[in-house]
Structure formats: structure tokens, C-alpha cells
Length: 365
Image 1: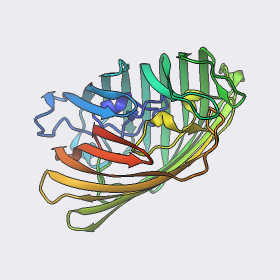
Image 2 (image 1 turned 30 degrees about the vertical axis):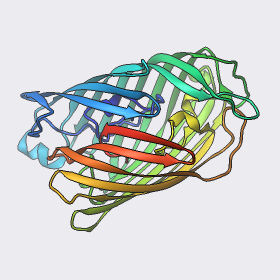
Image 3 (image 1 turned 120 degrees about the vertical axis):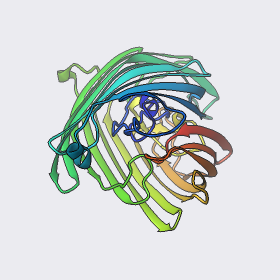
């Protein structure tokens, strides 16, 4: 799930508003020198309001503030600015979240640290268990969240590091759930440590026109560490961006997820595509791919078209669907921060018999 840091100046740092608390933390864009009218700034401190709308959380607003630490001219050439950021979110389905992000860069970007501390209180819809899948039921989840990651550049643009994550939550279901594959406990504490490999050659992380991004991570949760459930998670994601013509970018990504053991429902694998709530497909194994054409005929205004598909193993209701999950649609873009190429996006997406609208600041991938 993600959530808060979609807030935090919406860019690669996203706990994306897909609403499950396992945020990948990347990089808050340095917007304190950007001349956008939506940014309130005083020196190295900025405040940004961010509207959002998606089928998982409904419509709402994120307000984010960040302090960018001063750099020398030499430091600006070789590494991003370190930053402390905070954000809060509230949506129309009465979900809310707030948190703090810390990001530091040292030794000409040889070392990177990212940390996130926050609280989430979510009201989500789940597919009811049963032979026919039933209708939607309420899933209430509330808890405190801590994640940290430190990376060291080893060869060229390759980074290797370790990560740790802690989540202490309470959850309630409108109906009874049970099963050997997923954790449905009312009170659940997870604590895990793991490894990360990352590669990044994107020209501008918030909205690349060229470059590649590869991420692979493993996280091990174990009762010997203090986790209530013992399970393992493995994730991989590759994104590529090609400026195939003037003002035309072709972007594509592939991603996969595998979990083993007694996996908490919130930490299950999801199909991260548009056109349906993120809670629609939650299982122990998932894979997806999507491609998006981005055309900017005007200085600030542009259009996109996207197409993708995903696969999900037997989900938490014990239903299995090996059919391809489609995702396709169109969208419009308005560039609100030119220095970082940060766009406001409005997307309309379809999947099977469903459709959905998305409003956010930042690209989908």
C-alpha cells in the first residue's frame, strides 16, 4: 500500500496512494528553487498542497512540507539535496495518514539513507469470501509504521544496501476471514530486515524522458525478531524511458512479487495497474507489465495513452483466476513544476467491467 509520501512532494518518493502500508522510498524532488505557483516557499522550506483521487481511497488532499538542507555548488553537481519532509492526507472515505520522511546523501552520492515514520488509518473495501466472491465488505486498518533503508554505490549506477521495516496495526473486518495463507489477526505486529539492489540512470526521477530504473528487494519477517508472523517477501521492478521523438516519450515497466509463509493481508502481493481498487487482487504471487505513450504538444500540457496486463495467484478468498487482468486508458497532463518536470495527471482507466478516474501529482510510474 502506499500512501503518505505520494504526498511528500509527489515524485518518486511515494507511498503511492494505492493504499497498502509498504512504501518504497526513493527520492523527494528538490523543488525549493522551482518557480511553480502551487509551492509556498521561504528559503529552503516549502509547502505543497496535493489533490488526489483514486478508486481505493476516494478523493482527498495531501499537504506536504519539506526542508532542503543547504549545499555547496560542488555538492549540487554530484548529489541530491538532503531533506526532511512531513505530510498529512485525508480522503472522502474517511481514510487519513501522516508521517515524516528523512533522506540523506553523503560522499558525492556514494551513500544514501531513506527513512519513514508515520501513522495510517484506512477504510477500504474487500471482496467478500465465498464461492461467488460476494460483494464488498469493510476493512478497517490502523497502525504505526517505520521503514529505513541505507544504500552504498558499488559499481557505476548500482547501489546495494539493507532495509528494515516495522508495522504495528489493528484491523477489523465486516465479516469473518480465516485461512492458512494470510494473516487476519485483529492485532498484528511485523518486524523484518532485508536486502536491496538498485540501479538508476533516469535523467529526471520525477518524470524521466530517458533512462532505466531497476529495483529488487527481499524482506524477511521472523518471530525471532519480534514479528507475530514469519514470512518472506521478494519484489522486483524494472522501468525504462525512451524519448522516441521530439516531445514523445515511450515508458514501460514490468514487475513481480512473491510472498511465502503466513503473510499479513496488508502485505500481500498486488497488481499495481489502473482501472480497479488495489484491494481487488491480493495474493501471494503477482506479475504485471504496462506501457505508456506520453505526448507533450505544448510547453506545459500533454496527453498519454496506456495499456497493460497482470496476473494474480489464488487470492485471500481462496478464489483462483488465471485470466489476464487488463488495464488500459487515456489521460491528460499539466506540468506544475517545470524544473523537476512534475505533472498533475488525470487518467481514465478500464479493466474488464470496471473503470476508474485518477487524479494525482506525479506519473503513474
